[in-house]
Length: 289
Length: 339
Image (cartoon, rainbow over all chains, first blue to last red; front, top):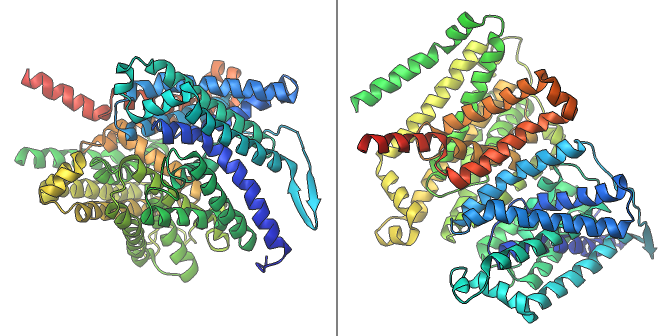
């Protein structure tokens, strides 16, 4: 494909913005867990996969209406998040973060295996098509537009929750010093459970929107897992708005690179860009907090 | 010291007798059992190479890139340019070292460590995998490619030894033993002390006069080179390379977890890890195929059961036995002795 400054290029840029919505939504829950609370869930992408299967199961197998199926999927993944925290993270809260990363890395295998045993290795499609629309000579998919809208709402809501609500402030405080906060009378266990539920729920929400665009299979997490960690780190950990900015940058690399060359090269360039940026600005594009 | 040399010689002699023993105990299945032993040794070598740096707190998720570079560079130089792997393997190893230094140097300079280092190396392995997939005209993309056969049997010029299992076994055994030797040389050097110090506290080590960046780069280069060597021989033995089998994050994770399960802090720990993971997956696969209850319950999906058991064990290991199987056993043994 050629890479001239024509309508295809414009289409690539706009599609990149839409992809940024998906990336931002995918990395949002991770940003809360990894960035704000400083707990490493390397299996976050597999939680998204759990959400995708949850929605698929409720919608295509049980035959529930779509909004209910999404709600069920989100609730299920939130529960999975709490479970993950209680079983794996809480014994390791005071261990070096690398141990949390490795333990949740083991969870990657567990979740992939459970998904395979429950649904098999086949690609599962939700069978919902929101269709696409054209503007000028360009085509865009509705599901991507919806995702972008949901992402923006979720980013604003999470930021508002963290900065303005009592509970959000408590979570922020806990993230700043996880030893002192309990001494101040805060119920750390409850706060961690709530944060994990929100993080898991956001993974489920992202999974629901993913399921409308992509087929689900057990290994899907490995496809985009590294990507969303990049978005998180690049945006400045814990910086939710920074994450949005990073998502836009990464998505532009992917779509423009992908439309000029092949799609793998778009991703490859994005990873290269990430590494170079980490060397130049290890604190992320925008300063954290 | 003399006892150690005696013990390791004795161990090597025993291991060298393995092909004979297998042929003696079970002549019918000897090809299969030798294959299993070769797989164990190959992965043991790669796990050991990873642990060389992993045990000093340099947890890399990027070693799948080094095995991938070693395997692919060797095969592609042979297939595309007709360059013998006798030269191709050293070039591949050099390429892996260059890649390791290119990523390692800025990382260490910027003091990127712990889980951030893990994430950086994760980006590197993904970059390498995507390059392999993207360059599909040459590499065969995600389907992989095969080294062109040079004649029918064993060939020194093409470094193709796979038709002869016993020969393959000895080649891989030599590689594994060589890697263990490198480990013990590192242990006896001054670098070992420096690395131990910086693994515990980088700032303190630097204050005590350790050139942190230099020491880290040294061990990273050695580890990457040995991993690339392992990857190259893996490809020559399998006669097939694909991102799924030798290059990528999945491989990195297998390396890291195998080494941790066995115990990355002790010489034979990664080897124990390799034996453990291979036995686990082969054992579960065989039980699965012969058990009618399991196959009735899950059908072919029961094949995922070994991954489930593996994953659960890993989580338990990291939480309750961070020193791994061998590390914990040795600790117990030492405690009993001193008590």
